[in-house]
Image (cartoon, rainbow, N blue to C red; front, side, top):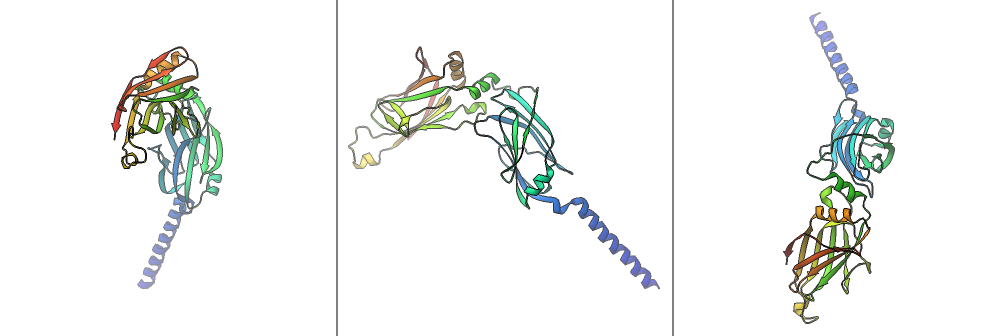
Length: 302
């Protein structure tokens, strides 16, 4: 009799354990969870800064702390809601989105692992991507927020984002050394993500890219390479093993902003002058009316 009672108790305990496991699995939604990563990027030609982000699931909120890199999550439910706050440099406007996203479509597109991406566009629009394919095109609303960086001039940021200025660069080599190549890095101090420009040929002082006159947007860094083979016998051993000088030139972005703002034209020339020792002599920005000597600092690596 006692053994039967213990057997019944044991069955009840096992049954309760099974039911508990079953209910726990249901509440955990194991088969609805995925391993995925979240990333953010700007569409081509767009400059914006993401300030806040929250992907909201049924049981959690995912906040990506490093918005410049993807953020991996393990065994998480897929998001049902999204909150974004960002600033558009081109529009000089803060935008916010706080609402539902298409959970069923995300779940349909998502496999056991994958990615969810946000691609910020113009005028408050953005694209939600699942496994790098477009899932939804959405739009935020304009909001009033305080400027987020007290150390950076907001007007200058907006100016560089909106400007259409083209600069034609020239190089004067007094030493007779051979030009190798040059790269112009855009004004990155203001968070902008314009690609770098370059020139690969020098003909009579004119810098060319793929045999066409080089053009660049406003920049604050110049990386110049010069082969120091002046007065060396062509095709000699020393000629082939001539050292390469790297000249790294930094400009004053604030000075460049003041010059361009006060001279509202879209075409400028830039003249880089190196002396007989291949040291930086001067850099001038010029239009048809005036020459502006730019403030520079230079570093040399041989």
